[in-house]
Length: 147
Image (cartoon, rainbow, N blue to C red):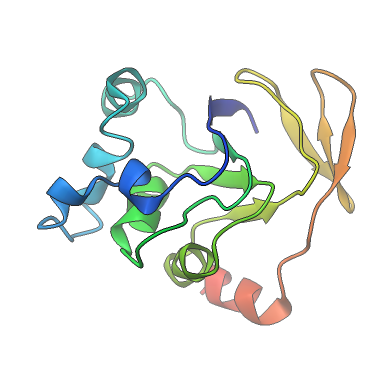
């Protein structure tokens, strides 16, 4: 898993999916507006320069704010994975409900371009050699993601 985008703490759903696009609700249409206010990253997504399976690396409280499901669906539409130090409760549940892969790793350290790999109960940053524990998803939530 390659880190393709990195953000800090308290990234709101309005940063992930700006409110001015709320009229667009179809999961097939929401991805085009992912991180729309970061034109460079949004253009990379829309030009197909970011491959599915890439990691959006977040700090604490990723996905805070509103309960807008589009914030999760726009990430899922690109096949991206969220790895963050913590994830806001409603955003996390929206990701689970939509099958978007999320990983909570409270001490994760990585930069854009770093390669991450899950080995047992840790995430290994293959670029730096550092290892970080992550919180396993509950069996109930995993069943929803799998479905």
